[in-house]
Image (cartoon, rainbow, N blue to C red):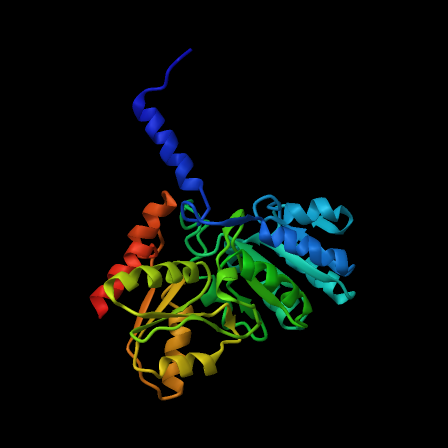
Amino acid sequence: MNTPAPTQVAQRKLTTSAMIASIAEEGQRTTKAPFGHALARLADERPDVVGLSADLAKYTDMHVFREAHPDRFFQMGMAEQVMLGAAAGLAEVGLTPFASTYSVFATRRAYDFLCLDIAEPQLGVNVVGALPGLTTGYGPSHQATEDLAILRGMPGLTIVDPADSVDIEQAVPALAAHPGPTYMRLLRGAVPTVLDEYDYRFELGKAAELRGGRDVLFISTGLMTVRALTAAQELEDDHVDVAVLHVPTIKPFDRETVLRESAMGRLVVTLENHSVVGGLAESVASCLAFARQTARLVPIGLPDEFLAAGALPTLHDRYGLSVAAIKERVRREL
């Protein structure tokens, strides 16, 4: 039996850790495959619900739906454009498709099909994109750091960025009930379960205040809402009182709530698992500018660059998405 050299072991561990796409903190409550289970439950009640995958059912939690409703699942192979075209056809005949793949493939590779086959005729197709933002260490080929920027300009498209398993489970039936096309950023696998502690209820197009605070207002979306809540709790030790406003729907944007909460003289910090170009920060900034309302705005998000490959905790520290980095940024700005 050959024993690998220490350097070989170290390289193997590094390679493996770089592939991990879990964003749960150690000891955090999680729920397995909330999207897949929510879709399967919905399909128990609605015979019109169907699922499609571009050879990534296991990695988008669509396999749960496939096993529960095999006669309503369509494996399209590695052909995202074909998958979205087929989803459009299914919607044309009265079905409610959920089509899942990685965010980078749904947005970069299949944009024209999403735009002209689905959005232009306003078909009720729900596109589900896994690995949004920095939720994989694979590097730029799989890191969808600009998907919101790509899709925000698409007319009639509803865009949702859930924070945790509670958000996902509640969003699925809401998206199915919505008459037009939707895009949801998917957190897959073991997903944190947090929002049930905050009396939260997902409502399409509405932001939700999760906690109040007099000094700082966090406006967050996606997995960064979970980080925002943890950072807000820990900043209490520094006598910094932080409010958290969760924005699960990027489009249509809840301007009324954002304007109201930003008008209280607090430092406003946006937090997003997306490039600072074209995402939540710019949505908030334009909202304030068009309303001629002023606020001191600090964006926390990914830089305008192609990101490195590596282990997620290291990358989140490097690019400022970790709880420690959030707290340090707030201390510097106050």
